[in-house]
Image (cartoon, rainbow, N blue to C red; front, side, top):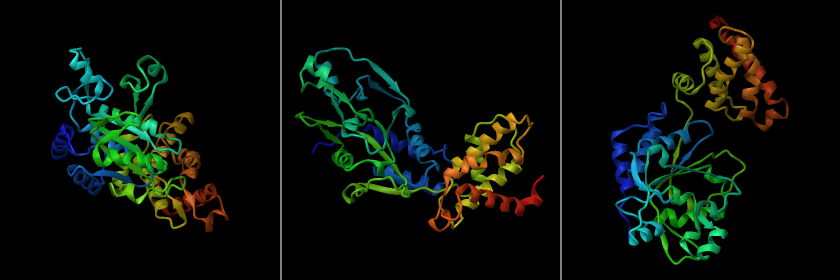
Length: 343
């Protein structure tokens, strides 16, 4: 079988050796695992709870890729190696094809996994109006799906375990051969992309991934920030800032959230988004309360709103008390324990 040379792989390998994933703080082992998989052209699924940087990490892979010149054909054909029928037909007729520049971050194409995602969303479909004009089997009648738009870039499949079996089957040939066969057409389309998926193993509203499908991937397990200081840096870097949030109070908040993650009575743990939520909402409440800086009372005002839906109690606990009451009790006990350190 003909296997096309990949400029994308060459660019990626060079970037991986020269650059780091700077948008993610900590998680050095995860970064190393991802780099080693991508250097060997492995398909990857990042596994972990929501809010711990899986999407940011995937975007960072695209960000380190260089800017490239491509034809503006929707398929991102390389100028020195056009692949799509539209470009080849135009070049045979000596027609001019517009070109464009794609920055690394623009080479990132996202697919959101969901039960109603269709094969046509991924591969493409026949446009009935164009079919009437050009003919039902003409290439002009075909509307490109996300797979083709990811050519020479990153195909990021978020929450891949929420897609149905038809989607999995449609991806098998693409993942194995980097080719797409479209229903009524008699030609195969070459596509070249880096596939990075994510999945939350604790999500109950998911579809089972078949062994045949999973066998195409390496799974890399992501984690919560390793230390309080790393999480503090993430919150300060990513969070919106409108008023002073005393660092000693912020450290208390993050320490409390990290203790909740270790709580044996909690099934679904609060993510870094919980830390960011309290950081931002407490500032907003402080402004509305006409405070010059965030106080503990401001934090107490918004803690339930930010945290209660971001954690789930184990069945043995949740039938005796609500998440709201549990958080209030835990936070009260936490503050009592930490009182000597508070201003």
